[in-house]
Amino acid sequence: MANTCGLILSGGGARAAYQVGVLAAIADMRRSAQQDLGSNPFPIISGTSAGAINAAVLACGADDFDAAMAELVEVWANFHVEQVYDTGVLGMMRSGARWMSLLSLGWLLRQKSMRPKSLLNNAPLRDLLTRRVRFDRLPGLLRDGHLQALAITASSYATGEHVTFYESAAPITPWVRNQRLAQNNTITVPHLLASAAIPFVFAAERLQGPQGPAFFGDGSMRQTAPTSATIHLGAERILVVGVGRMQEPHQMVTTEPQYPNLAQIAGHALSSIFLDSLSVDVERLQRINRTLALIPPDKRTDTQLRPIELLLISPSKRLDVMAAEHVQALPATVQSLLRTLGRTESSAQGQGDALLSYLLFEAPYTRALMDLGRADAWVQSAEIHRFFGWDAPQSAAPKIAGSP
Figure (tube, rainbow, N blue to C red):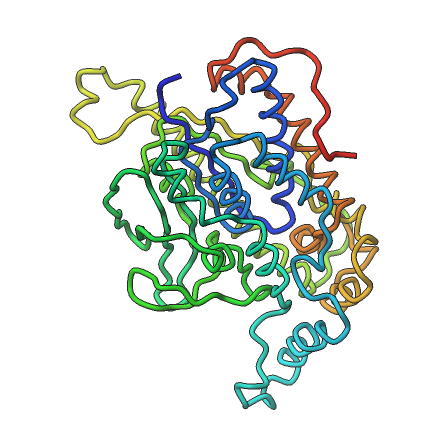
């Protein structure tokens, strides 16, 4: 199909393993459909938070999509939290314990040197990204036509603005919208760390933004239009891979409500940041498409709007429930920290497990998410084949490489 295809990978900490399963299944379908394996199916790639990391790996391997996918599968199928944040006793004391002390004795901690920057120290993630993400390859891939653009989003704590940092093959004028800015920029590991800096959990990152130097945090914060950057960069068809169910079933509460603990509040806040804006933006884009379909083609040219074909794949199961099934895979220090925040094994209806689902970077959980992503993609295989213009799908789903 001629229309330029864009890929949007949303944020969500460890939940981003689900995206890898979805994309690995799509890679399998692509091979089965005997497509040109030397081409990149996603010329425009946009990522936010942990999705930005997956996006960067794919972009920096755009000349060999299958090899880039194999690398992502290998990392996520063998993940351990020690690769993302410090879980040692001393490390947890320097970050988590000091953070809890700040909450309880903040009026005593008047010296700035005593104030922790975040709940967890993600220095190991910086090392992992430096080794794994080959940003030195990106200019050549853009120049040689393997990729049209990569966009990474982050949120400025100084101005409150949502900033999209992008690199593109052809000149693209940075766009300015209400509380949303774009900056043509050489993307680096600090941009990934900033985009993935979950508020309170990981430290902000200092970047050179449109308004000068500032500290930036997770790109999902104040992200009112997740699809916007990909459209600005020229995508006419967009595959969106979310990390949360778009339509959660209503839950009946039959027990006496108890006051929410810190783990519940944190999980609820993170779910609002990571999931709600994507759902709203997808609904808005679908509504615009339906409206444009009612306008005669000759009249449509008078507007700047154009229909955008959209395919959304999101989890069919609650990821917080899945996380609770694998909590024992976490180091004892992290389990202890979560208990301090209020999470217990007896939490009613999985309350408090949303936070866990973002921090559980352990192979049993990430592999389960990859398997779910793969299964969900195959359920939508007919839609995926239509989206890419491939031949009808085969009935059997091949096994994902690296999956148990």
